[in-house]
Length: 207
Image (cartoon, rainbow, N blue to C red; front, side):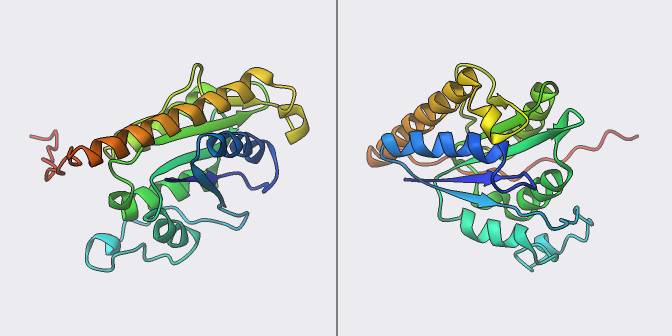
């Protein structure tokens, strides 16, 4: 069992990374492998609505870190997406990354557990956390929770170290992710198949 943790911060070793490392260390205690994937600090284009990924190309037409992630994601059993909070929302680059990753490669992640983690100095965490969760709930992904919203506070990785409640929240998130992955594995061994996807019914509210 392997979990892919996505660091959506422009700072490779900042607050978001510290939260994800806490999750990673705790996952290891429960026998679950993990890897942190940094989206980098180069500009990431938003979706341009070309539809190429759905028309036979099989990947996003903008060949960057998004395609690198989607190719890697297929080999993992669960995901945790971390982002800093910018203006009570996830970071701009992370938003573009999530839009394109889920639109072009959502099928590779469907029916696998996922969770969002946010890092903020003071406020806006709940709004950003809700934003991340929307990607999972539109893609048939079980959402993994903790005993509190998955957030850490601090203006540096060192300050996050002082957020003992936030770090405990990360530990319990890891424990719950490991538990759910093992439940899914046991279910498969018992002959419980993954749900079959249905063709979406698209309804436009126009006259």
